[in-house]
Image (cartoon, rainbow, N blue to C red; front, side, top):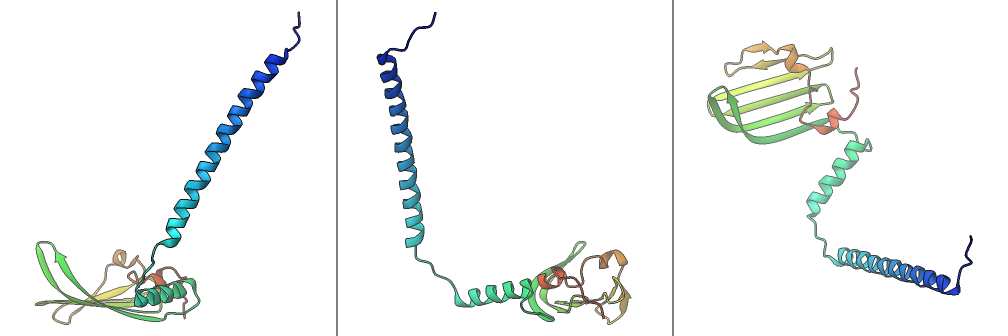
Length: 161
């Protein structure tokens, strides 16, 4: 047997629906207030930056995007050289020419060494000991890009010739 709906059933359903709608609207207004407060705080924060850092970051982004061609790079560094139980600290110069040639010169106290890479004809290189004697670099040590320390050489396809 089908019972017709009474008007009291309709009004209680409307009250429940109205209560849910008010609750949802309240949560929406609260969420909007939180978002506007957070974004307002972010905008009112004082931003400071180092002009030199900004310039370097802009130049680096330009070089990495291909807008500026970087052909040569020279870096100076201080570091520690470890070979087994031997350690020495001192300076280093890292140079890269194009994407296929690089040189690393290390001078740490009585220890010095140069590593030269020229991948023009494929991976290859040599190293020069403290006495000036040249040695062929092991092929597996030449599988990394010649300019491994310079992102602009690693992120670009090398141009041969």
